[in-house]
Image (cartoon, rainbow, N blue to C red; front, side, top):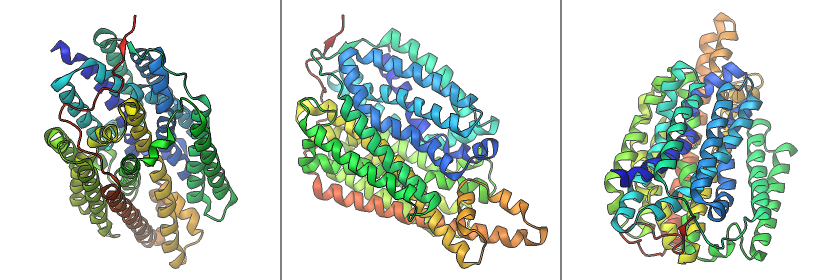
Length: 506
């Protein structure tokens, strides 16, 4: 049993940091009421965590190689716990967003070290088994977030953060006891210019998309940051090409298989999980479900993703990556389209078939992404490839939330405008901030029934558009993977060791 304690320690941190990507979704209406937030602030509560995680995971991996994987993992775990406490105590939306950013920094330090720690803790068949279990944990974490978030929000939304404290203590103790310190001899220094430019560029794009949802695409506050973000990312590419030890060797994208896997990772999280924010708001603010009831609606997604990843993941990795990842993405796209049948008078049951199919797609594609990326690059770039997959996953989620917010508000505002509603854009933003009940309650009694019907129609229309865009992203992503990826299937022994020269630290 002791031989599996390192995996328990690693999976504890992995599960906690990944579940915090989606655990806040069900709590958003309560947060909005308690902290009096705008829709843009709600988006940033979700997005700033994923953005920090995406931007810093590669840089954190470089630090871990240089100073020790266990040490960086433990620092990240402690930072995550402290930030979680700050999130739970936050008296305002601004402080909550700031604490979530710090939480994302800690999560990046943990996520950057997980694959390397598993590689150095296990060998042969045990390594394959360990990666299979880790893949199942990764797949289940994002799917279980809304369920656990709903249960904890019944107590108070702040408990979705407080619950991390005892889990972090357990993770720290177990890591100190069971995980051996390793580092890579002669590892290069972290690529600080690359990290800074990538963070600024990605942040500018996400900020512009969030502002577009609130102010419209014609506002300079939206397209200005978008244009600046694109320019900064172009500069990042030039810098990375010139550096001897870059954060990410952009020449890897000359390999069509690697490019296909990165696109697949980006679009998987965007298509599969970004829409859950808007589902949660609909279930609670329009249908009137409690946080726990709203979380339980996601059970089909959680159950199917975990079962497929746990029991079929090892078998699926014997197939060529393009069929596994590409096919899983197509299934995810079909699942989103199945949920696009939602109407103003629909109940939560309309989502169940789509969520079940979505779970199957996630369970098929998600565990194979990391091993597919490793199979697509030279052995000496294995660690960089695994970090790039994690970056693409979280960046896809952050971009997906921002893009779908713009899609939702534009569609809902159009329905309100056609119905002759006053201030349709402001009303649509209020809907996405979970304020449908307050809008109906503030209307004259004689107008409340009609207003409730109108808001329900607007929300359903916006939600349909969200599902259509998500479905298109999943199917297009799947077809791109099927076309681009040509790497052979990885061996059954699991992903190869990222740094074969790694030695225990003294």
